[in-house]
Length: 160
Image (cartoon, rainbow, N blue to C red; front, side):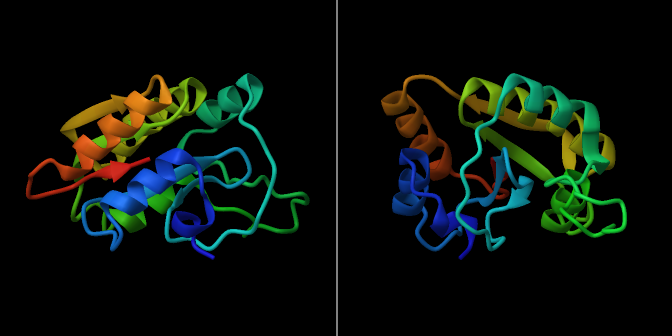
């Protein structure tokens, strides 16, 4: 099942309520298990939490580290890396994102912020992109996400 439907936390419920057809934003997610992925990616149920150590390893790995990490070197296609995912979502830089929202808890926002810089270097996020950080008490975060999704604009970005 696609991550957009699999995840059922309050922010995902807000996303689906405000944008049920997925037309307001191209959405990606950051997962302790799957790394950075397009929200249309099918995922299985899992139980993993983002820790400070894992967040630091994701940041250090940059745009080319595959998540989940391959268990054996002989499996070169295990996992996907953030650079591949954002390149695909931005049509390989032909349609760079100009409006981005980083939504989630402190560690997630920290990792996503580091990724945005890498995505900008790749040309997949415009260097002058508007980057909103949506983080805080859950009620306020849900309101801010709703407001961001409903903003008018020609080009919607990546709600991570």
